[in-house]
Image (cartoon, rainbow, N blue to C red; front, side, top):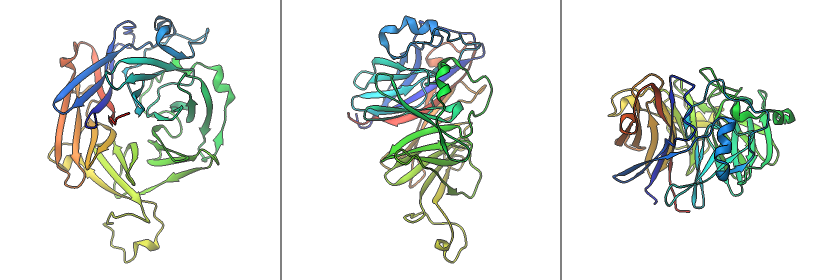
Length: 360
């Protein structure tokens, strides 16, 4: 299983009233060497849908006054994480617990503070998600019970808003383009006692010490504009995607082996945090700038990202593997929607996250 890769993806229609509450929808792509499989799952979205899947639900059923969506959100999976024998995948309003051995659905974990999670993180008995529009970190147990939540303010202070509990956020939809929240947190990863969050709006890591509740920024010395999306710590380095088709590799200044291009006699005299280098996908044998780039993981020296799939473009996306050292493309697998289902009225299909599966 060590060479197996899973990719989450989302899709949406021009008509935002398409419900399909009892039809399983494609959401997970598993690649194991030459073998590729697509797995589909049910996606309850409105309060009435949750009742139909009550036998799978862990956590809270919808509030009695939870509204129906005015316009329905997308289908599919967002962030991926793994723990023990299970893969965990975020959806618009839940966390799906999926068996590694057969990709069968074990449970749907949900509560009123799970709303449009991007990255997710599983650590022991805790599921970490973000209530994106409120910059709120939510800690949930594996039965869907909320253990704690707190919010990161613009000044990097921590607040706790108890009035969040008055709203069932699962049924609040983002009906506009662009980021939500002050920070728009995407990836979330727990490193020791710290949570490392990528901020799309700040182009930086936001780091929360779970013991002291102190918050700091981890900044990069970049030589070009980027549109940071995802970021993951792997073997002492930090790997990011920029949605305009760049992969960013960074290391702490004190231990960095990244050679600065700047003509400075002694670069260590200056304040620097993370030293960064870039892989521009347009300058590789890919030969073009992809129209989207998100999700990142690594197997050995091979970096994995998803590319393409923006709104109103070709109804496909790619899983790209590229060697970190040589920048040689190892493969570019494509998932075309026409091979899965009818394309009528579909507006987009795009990869969201990618994860190398490890044995439980």
